[in-house]
Image 1 (cartoon, helix red, strand yellow):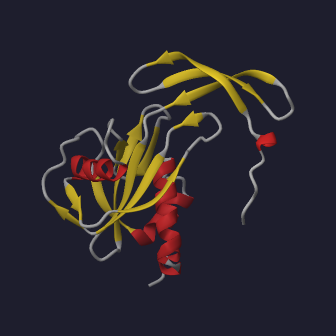
Image 2 (cartoon, rainbow, N blue to C red):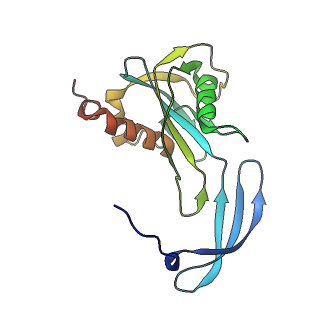
Length: 191
């Protein structure tokens, strides 16, 4: 389905200024006008881009995940290896680096699945999602505060998601994408 873009429906940014910034986040105010003609200031939040990877074992039956606590939401949940992309770093290089740092595994292959914005209305923070097929243990994890990673059966992932045990948008998007392309057996638990 293709929709035509109409500049008459575009929100116009007349300027933007930061009101708070550090290496992790920039909060700004944008002077905008909307199609109705109304003009006002709208807040913006800019975060560094991130990369995350669904790492499948060599057989494609298990996914490498960590069950960890997130203090901001005060939630325990299953997550994928992920992290921020460093300045000048390609998203695929960041994904590969984060897998090794957080898990001690090296991906045999790395395929870009998609890039999405988790809160497109107010937050700029592209998330680059990758799929790794196969992994080799090459070292101990060097990032010790990222949780303990373990191989989770892919057949269990849909149930974990349904029970709210996967909360991270990057993990949800990546895992649901892989389940969708894996076919009914991975979604239903059937062999």
